[in-house]
Length: 294
Image 1 (cartoon, rainbow, N blue to C red):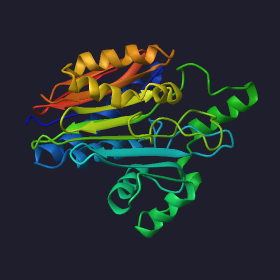
Image 2 (cartoon, rainbow, N blue to C red):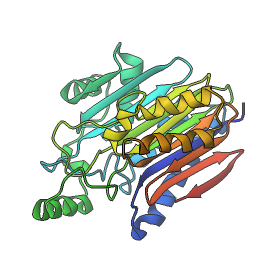
Image 3 (cartoon, rainbow, N blue to C red):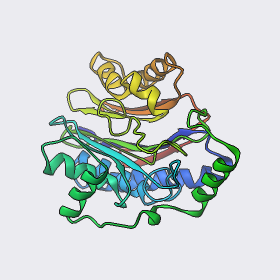
């Protein structure tokens, strides 16, 4: 099997000032994931590492630098899925771990559950030895200013795709095993307790080594209504190519007046992506060659 990885840094109205940081960020993530695949590593390790890189990059709405909720705190969601076993792990509303994607994997591998939230997820993180941080470490000046401005001018999370993002990765390794990973800080000024599509397996991501893998980004409530990632992977099972399935997925999203994007890898190792927002940051590596699009 020809290994490949594709990552996204969110589908939204990425401003001109952030285009280059987004391009560099997704490129770095894809190349780091590719290094694992190149050495014969697993798709699961590759996808997780790519997402971890973006969680540590304040350019993106994941990990440090994420959007703040209505009370001025960063609440993080993440998920990961092994397409070979169909096992998955996810966390929601966590704010005391730097890399929620690592915690999502611990949920998958060290518990009998799929989704842990809030304090329960924090307890697992501490038990398993993940570094615990003060919530303020996730906040950067750019996002604090954005939050203050929203409070002053009034803002609804229902606002269109101007500011709504997630980071994700899908990969296939030399053994033909697929994986997907996602992480996000959610929508800006969201209600406390709001959870979007990212930790909902089948909505934000899905991986099945018999079909392929997909990871979405965009308006989470719309994505959940059409179970976007699972629907896309099922299209691969029906014989659509990665690109055709990605385009069909966005058509499905339009049915609920949704906006966003999706990345896909099919059983032949072909990649596809589509979006209906002004921009989406994408990078992929096939046969050692990296390509970046925004």
